[in-house]
Length: 440
Length: 172
Ligand SMILES: N[C@@H](CCC(=O)N[C@@H](CS)C(=O)NCC(=O)O)C(=O)O
Image (cartoon, rainbow over all chains, first blue to last red; front, side, top):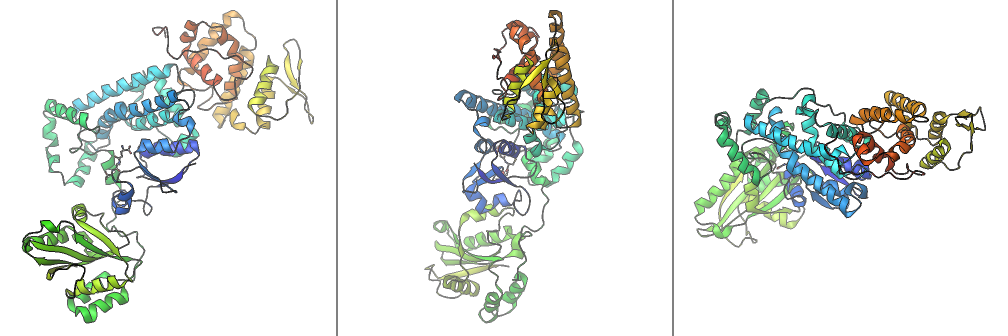
């Protein structure tokens, strides 16, 4: 029986699928959705996480045996038992049919309709009206099917029911008011039966069905906007809405390629979850206190002799539990040309990493001469992971090879000495020191 | 009939040793002699007792409301389905069809003793229905088919064929 951890943000309908399946199968599933176990937007961007889950998306599952999976449907399938997956080839295929139906027929229009009511997407009347029609069509198909059936596949609850119910949660909570859902009596009966099964209830809690269709929440939408200041396009949204025809066509095209509506213009439930995540000012806040005081060391480094005072101070106070030392090497030294350009590369990176100053120190050195140079550096970071859940870090991270050093090793002692003091043999480089930059 | 039903119920509940029942009166009301008290009389009394003996009291309802609804349908079962004449059948089917329009089970959202005993009681009626009538009372048919497939319930009764794709789709 599967046992493992599900990484997600709290109250994620995609994660619910796996959680409910585990309730039925008895799989021992731990959920990591809050700090310190998991912080959405941070943990899922660490190298350790990306190593296992290259997309950095949640839900993501890691078994106690090390087995890793992403994509919510695959995770739910893995955590199911045979009865949930469909015991015959026909039943299993029907389960897959409804799982795909949920993803392609329900989720896209449901998102277009519901997100504006949650204030996470601009309202567009035509898009919403179209989405309502699409939802009605999906409901009609379900209603017809459930006229003669208690559950979607066979006579028992399966992954088909779990998946379709979870993908309709937002609809039933936000917009399917009694008069709208009244014609789909069979769907209502089935939905209510499912959400009231004990295995659903422990995961979903009490699901309150919509009493009055929620409308576009302009106030909330306005509040959410500044958080996405990075996208200047946003300002244009209301103007564009004035030419709905054109916009809709554009949207339709985009929709075909990608399931999410208008991806780069609007927020979706993922962004909303991210925005809702309590922003800890300090990404290192969850780490235990350290005896090594970075600012103190930096002061020594700036004001006193490096070899005589700063380096001894560093080793006297360094806390290898709370900090780690890394060697970085620029990957594309062949492309380095003029030295002043190479230096700009380093200072540019330092600027982008500004937010890390309290928690990192580095000496990065340019070796060699024009058209024959290399860049490498020694970094001291808070924590044991590369600290890059901070904006704009990704580009720089990917341009370097990173190697964690054993702080007790001779190699590390030598490198720290040479890089901090900007003098020595730099044996591992094989080029002469040209100039150095300090991140402090 | 009540005696076979009780013995099927015992098997469904996985009770180890079968009880010996007798009947009383012209209506052949089942009676269970108990070793340490007065005899238990009547289908409902005995059935509820078996459920408790099997420690499956959730089958009697898991909330005050559902316990009341379960009792209500058990009552309906013995008053309406133990003996009826031909004219009653349509009324019974109509009532049930309306009731089951927005329900999966007889009581709330859980499978209970009410589903089991209603299923046993209505089986002869459903068995006699033409395909078109089954479609006419689709909610009853759907519920019936679900219960007859519920693991361990059907026992002594023959399965009733139910088509999932309607052949008279225009009728509601
Ligand atoms: N198709 C995927 C969608 C997963 C997904 O989009 N996850 C979002 C949250 S809603 C995410 O983790 N985004 C983080 C990111 O893109 O950095 C699934 O069903 O698992």
